[in-house]
Amino acid sequence: MPAPFAFTLPPELSAKEPPERRGIRRDQVRLLVIDRTTGRIEHTRFDKIARYLRAGDLLVFNSSRTLPASLRGCECGATHGPCMEVRLAERLPDDSWLALLLCEQGLERDDRIPRLWKLRFSISGTELVDLIYRLGKPIRYEYVSAPWDLDYYQTVYATEPGSAEMPSAGRAFSWKLLLDLKRRGIDTGYIVLHTGLSSYMDDDLDRIHPASEEEYFVSATTAEKITHARKNCGRVIAVGTTVVRALESVADSEGRVSEKQGYTRLKIDSQHRLIAVDGLLTGLHEAEASHLDLLSAFLSPETIRAAYEEAIARKYLWHEFGDLNLIL
Image (cartoon, rainbow, N blue to C red; front, side):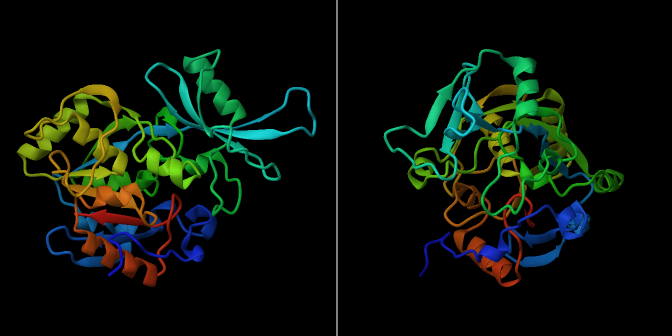
């Protein structure tokens, strides 16, 4: 019997470019739908998502905007000297940053030099963010075929700069689809959670840092919308695992959500009883990823594995430009 979340993802199932560069709209990616009660699996297209929602439901989005968090640095005054990529992982409560340092191709890694560093910039606030946007590039993993512009790494509703990587579960939403859902009586709310790195490019580091300390803000308006949806038998559906972490971090024992700002290291797995969230829209996650542990708070490992086996057989695409999974 295989481990609950052990599977082999064929390389060709990694989405190498945004859907718009594959000849389809962002809202035309595929959608894998799983019923939490029965385990039934359906296959559809994302722009048909309204079929699975109903008036009174509340979709909660993460409106964090992606930073071009990859910064390249070279030895001062050197034209061909050693260079390094600095990946900003997350802003810490003391206004410093956790960063991953990577030697550029052709340079050997020195294991005596730690790969994770705590950095403090000489400027801060808007001035620092503006400089990062001028100098940085989006973080790019090896499966992505080209250095796509930052616009491809943004959701249409993103407003608050701060994420090292795109909160990608909401990428497929277009304004047209959002307006259509609103006309159908499906409400929307927004939180902010600035996402950290999904990988530290090192198995040992990934095990040490399974859940980043991420900054979040839940507004009074969104808290009120959640209360209203619950009173009227609507479902609270998180668009992304970041939203699950934020709402489950602020909810009290009765599931009531109130306005709050802070940092969370909450780890959600099969032992966690969901109290704020009823459903989840998320991407497809890699084998043994901590995100799959979070999914096990919604579904049994057996159901998740069966769904993923179907997704692989039907050639769904993985990662930030890939297909999506709705769990209700």
